[in-house]
Image (cartoon, rainbow, N blue to C red; front, side, top):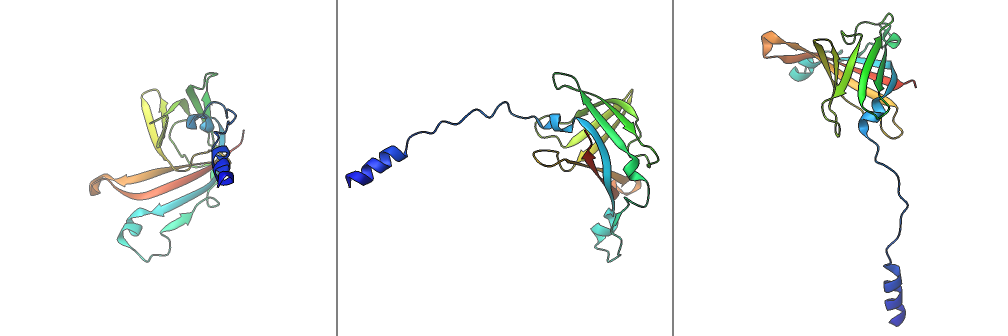
Amino acid sequence: MMLLGAMLVTGCRPESFKDIGAPRTITSSFIGTWKITKVVQVDEDAKRKGSSFTFQSLDLTTLFPYTDFTLTLNANSSGQLTTFTVDAGNSPAIIGLTSGTWSVDNGDQPQALIFKQGSLTETVTLGAYPMGGNSKLNFRIERKDPANDNKVMISYTYEFTKQQ
């Protein structure tokens, strides 16, 4: 009985752990140059209607030169988000802006990237974050029908892989 009591007392000592460092911010993982590796188009209207049409989803990556598209997201030395540049090459336009400033809608849990060039602003919805071992960044652009209560008709999901 005493042996059991001694084991319980010595087994409950607090353990000391080494400091793992400053917490990593999500936005710092966006910084760098990104290249498109996959583009998928989804017919949201057909999907919503439960259509049996074969092409509710279509991989467009090799149909157009999307892999030419690169996006560079910059920050200053203190980690503050600053500028972006787009090199579309021969790729179709993903966003209509070529350079400017960028930000996120929420620094702790971003759901959108916001690109600004002068008075123009474009917002894309974030999918996968580039965190941990994941070097992918996904975002989605929706095309809506203003004559139909702004319902999403077609969406495009862009997968980027970090280059630097």
